[in-house]
Length: 501
Ligand code: AMP
Image (cartoon, rainbow, N blue to C red; front, side, top):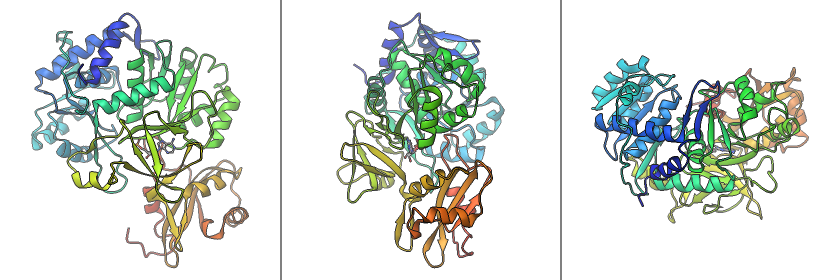
């Protein structure tokens, strides 16, 4: 059988044709699995008419919509490579991705058509078409006129299905080459592990330009024939209104904190829910506990990244331990060489093929025995349970000693006045790096010296932040990750202006 992931979906869609696959949370629209298959065929024929061939990249910077999902499926179906981009990127930023990926086709928002056309002309892109947030636009118009049958292109498992650029907080953003086999094995494993069945209804409010909303959420729903309630963006009231009809939710930690901030969110809201899953950024143990107290559900935290898909997960049955990301997935291995905590390395069928046109970078980020170096610092206990301490590049070395930001952040978060915290290292004339904390206030903060004194009771002196800054909000990206590189820039001159950053 073909290694094309869509060939697997096609079987599921055929066997479940009359059932609802996707419906919008406001009830305005619904699509059956049969409709999904026919729509994917129409879009596949449109891609063909636009000159897209197996192996070609299709760059997509369009809002989340059902039409965009059909485009994703169609791209797989014709054997091309889906390259989604964060909708927040400016045209100047998109120029880099287009020049690097060299797509055959760009799909953008209608408002950007002229800018993208100009960009496309420079980069020899064949065609530029558009889709708006309602799923209308020149591509949708074209697809509507197409035949609803299409022969799925045969592909090897090792062929590319997606090209996903890493967020690139340092250096150039790199295109991670994700194969059909990567996606199929990872989604299959998660369906089994999280017991996703046709009886499930997934509440989907994540963006689909990222691995979480695209591959983890959609691929597992499509493989298992679970039905999906669709929100084009996260809206906490709409989530609460839709949740009684759902059994499964996948979210970033901020979904959970925002739900908790709504008194209308209660155990009754979650009465039909079977499983809440969190990932993409660390879930605070406090959020886990507060959520359990409110809803009766222990959030299942998992860990993964663009290059690897999902790596580890707390168990479906058994203890979901707050502050840990659980065990390596079946078929996936995780290790730390040397002392703990240390950098996590991973191998398995989930691990990507390498960075697009960067053989040097690819070599650097794999070990000699082909394990991928995640860049995350973690610890693995005797049972194999993994905890993440932070990114290796966020590690602070102060006076020659390692400081792991998470330990300090946990100590800060335990202070009742503090809402959230981020701990960074910035240049320091004596210590190389000095520890700085940036915090939000839950209630009025005590004086800085008092917080420092409180931390000194539990932390060794070299770990205690020398300065604590209050901010209204921590800077975060679309997936809720705190932007530490941004904070390091902002506070670079804290200990003098010796910074060369
Ligand atoms: P991305 O490639 O955008 O998905 O980002 C992957 C990174 O997100 C990982 O390398 C981790 O640093 C972080 N991450 C993902 N899930 C978790 C988690 N459950 N806890 C802590 N960090 C996480």
